[in-house]
Image (tube, rainbow, N blue to C red; front, side, top):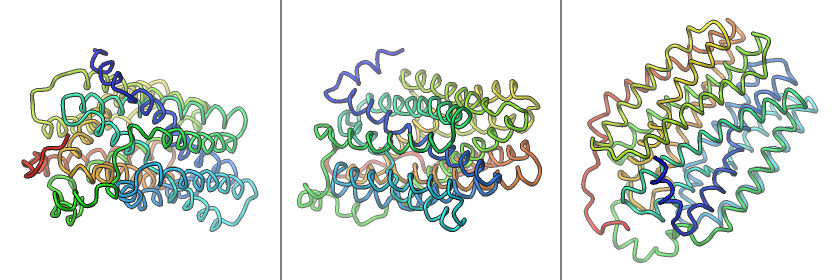
Length: 410
């Protein structure tokens, strides 16, 4: 099962940029939950904590496509380094104003600044894979690998941040996230050999080859909007479930168990991602994506029914099985649906969708938890999962890529 992964990692530079991307992405799994834990600790409100996390996530989501577009144009290194520096400083500012009990408005400003400077490292790494592997069967394996590594991030990150928050203080966890983001960005930017060629360096030839593709927005490409809608739903599942698990385990008297439950969720996804990437599928990619989305909805519904933390852990382990196939198939569809010189932007739109509703759903879940108790928060991921299934079914016919005229991409 692992041999396809060994083959793609043997490509020159592949292991280095993939491992660096894994390290750099640890911050993603630590920042949102860490900000929730810090603000809840300093203010006592899950609603405010969720709103701050939502501000951070919405800011990142709104700016992410623009940063990705700039990255496609100028190259990864020229954008990644300055953004990482400002991002780390902004996280430090968020910690400082929370610890000092600054006015709520200042807290939101710091969260917004941390969000608008966050770069979607996963999109950059996937763009490197497309540049390294091309459009052969190895690309599905590469995207599956990155989905698995995403889950590794969400196995390690929540455990680390909850342990630090419980044993030391949430502020320490957020400082660690800032250091990880900064060092990871500089390590990735230093690997110029595998960096995709920027549009600026080939502007003359590219302008002659794909004038229509350049003048058309990525969201107007066939099927891309369907994918974005499904990823919006997926983000709604992830963000609200994270906050609700933290509240549910705290209400049960075992707050440190939140990291374990979320880690099991990611572990289930990681295992399914390994299997998914190792199989040579015969059916259409769009059909596989729809089936995975439907499965995700079915496996999410039981969250709202469980009465105890041990049962919750089992439900989350099983629910994780559908996540990696949804992310992998969605990323592969984006690669087929958008022009090669807009790939980072296309991938960023799915990341944007995840981040946007991840943040908003966390805030909505926080309000429900404050009003009706921890279990009520699970209504948000269940609703989001069902809406995602509806969007996938309605838009399934648009997920079949049309042949692209012009030269074949390497």
